[in-house]
Length: 275
Image 1: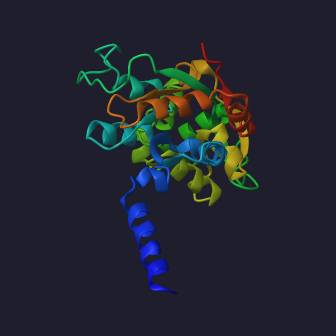
Image 2 (image 1 turned 180 degrees about the vertical axis):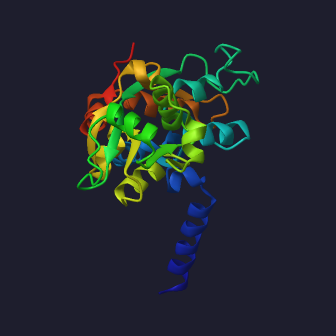
């Protein structure tokens, strides 16, 4: 290579290096989504679909109990979009909610972004083969009174645990007495409860229908809205603290498309049309 050509190449490289980074590569938007553990499978599928259609966006998830996620948001964790398994945890972050629920006056929900996304069902699931031959919630309640069955349920700060508490109260059962007698064991989120049932370390567990489906478990009964104290609705909202609220809103809007609704429905969620 002659000296003039070498100097020309050096000049071109120098000019390219001096150009803004955006000329070389498009900067990606990193979207942080906190979602209830029961949405793990569906949201991971939707992430692949969304990123394929929007290569400029990378989605990062944190899945856990809604109570844990709410606490992390309150304590300053980075989050753009929150999807809760119950209204309570969202209400606790929403300044427009009843002060009796949002007792700390927290103001994290971006105005106008909150929506109800999907509905789930609370179910009674059993291990493979159903060794104890559990047949219904009525049957479970009778056996808990007799003290001859071992139930897995969520903690009191977990939505599925809170629904379970309402079911126990519906049957006039004393949770504390049952726990003290060794009839109940707990999980810190619905996935932990589901695992206990899958591993047959308990006789049955109260989990969401979607988790039972994803784990291949048999559901022997489904709780009514009366037993649960209402419908099992998952609200979603963009947070005021979001570093990219427009991107978060765009992803939330995508969750209402026919493509995303089909993913939710495939495991047993009932998508809620956006008003």
